Length: 225
Image (cartoon, rainbow, N blue to C red; front, top):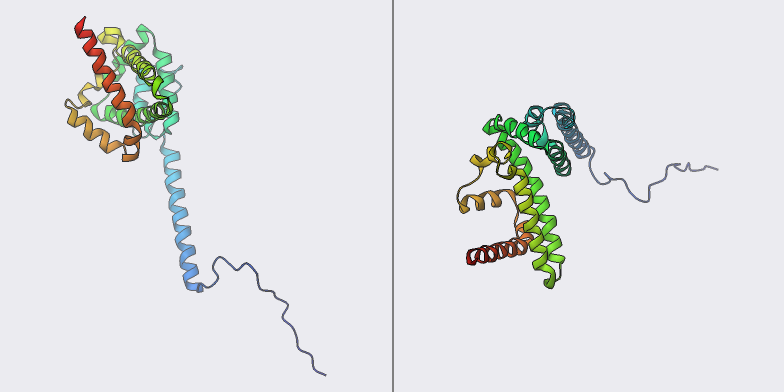
């Protein structure tokens, strides 16, 4: 009596990722994925190996700090939160009359290209701060929004005054960047449109409009005095 030999292998109930795909196509996909992973790994390695670590602000001179801020392989490669954290550390470390003078002198020694690198990287920090503020404003009840705007304007003016050295040109760390600022409103509009998207602009518009209106009111009040 003859017996039939049964196959011991079992078919998988779930199916393979490549089921239904020819071996040639499967190999092509694997090579493509592998190449993409290799390229990504090489890019990551390049950035990791060429990115300059931030100098500790409490252990270096102002010149070394500004060299880092303007280096294309330095400050701008940090994540946005890390950039903000580093800037806060710089401000806290040099926030003395002598420190601000040293920082101002070092910033003035930066080339225009280095200043532009710093400005471009810092714009992202400012944009994130504005978006956080805009979201808070949009959640604020209408009856409390004027107080919110007044506080925002006051905080901005305080920061502007501190960075401006209180009128002392030798302590004004914003002065070296004035040549990079557009002189007309059209120029500012072009900058904003090139560095923001429609969704962010729509979210920030209520806050920006409210602040602009409040600033006009404050200016009119001051003129009547």
